[in-house]
Length: 332
Image (cartoon, rainbow, N blue to C red; front, side, top):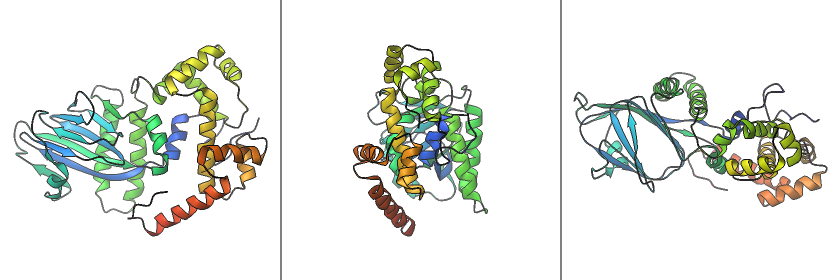
């Protein structure tokens, strides 16, 4: 059996870790982070956002009402909230209060530690809020893996470590020290892993599938050997399920059939290799288990809308333009 090539994984066989595989493709990295202290009643409205947002509440109570949700999230001291839906939201001490423009509110404040109201009052609230950035080309993968909002309560297994990570992240994100960006990128990835592997963090979807004893095993097999010519029967036998039970349970949790998932994952690996390497297309095809370059090219064109060589050329041109003009929004 062919072993996955270096561009697919960076750890020894036979380990298979789908969550690490996914986060590697997402290229999660650091963004901004702020420590905030406030007192008294307030409510702030924020617009849609294109990144992963987080809130770690250190003291007090906070309500977060996401647009479209029937009920707000109530955060208590020690809670953390991870948000990736991108929907506008309101953060407030009381959800009944009229909300003010949050962007204008923060633009009027100064300093790395934001303070407003009476920070010495009995109703003082302390929190760390910020964002993690990721490869925008992988947004659909992010949406497949990460729930729209993930509320991790103070008594959850992951909460203490996550709060400590986010506190350190907030400190380093605003530090001028050498190597700060490297540290914050690493902290961002670790904090996200800590949040996503919290037991029971998702009741359905990809994370729930990974936590499921049988379907999680199937995902690890597919990620561990994407080049293998899997059949549903062979996969079912490996995880000790019937073919029909595996197909049904996999679709219920993941949202697609096992071989459809395998095909989609192969195409993600192919796109990453075409962007990041000079590996010949024929070699990529062979590594991913295709019998010929033409079979791979046909599958890639169905998935991505263009031939592998053209995709490589276009994406590298786009990446080069981003490198030359990092502050400009470039879409492709």
